[in-house]
Amino acid sequence: MRKIDRGSYCRRALGKLESPLGNASGILVLLEHQGYEFHVIDWRDLDLPDPPVWLVVEGKSAATHWPSVTDWFRFGAPNLMDYKFRLEFSRKRRRVVNPSWLRYFDFSTDRSNG
Image (cartoon, rainbow, N blue to C red; front, side, top):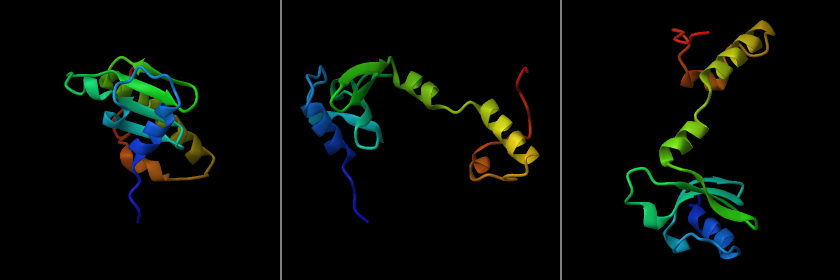
């Protein structure tokens, strides 16, 4: 097994852009998508309680995309009701009774308002 330094891919992507990010070697990479899109925190913001998260797209842009890490998590959090609908739909069609993602959810109590 080989360890991949995702930060090096991001630094390479940033190297091709006019970027307002500080020292690219100090960025914190939160997420990498297929080696060309990165969600990062600027090293200068790491002391902030809830720093902004940047979206870096190789060859296109580097800009603040989420005002905080909290908002970044909100963006990425699954909509539980969508998953519940998928489960009910799959079971009605008898495609998959217990999909692999079901272990991450508990639908035993429905706290939704509709």
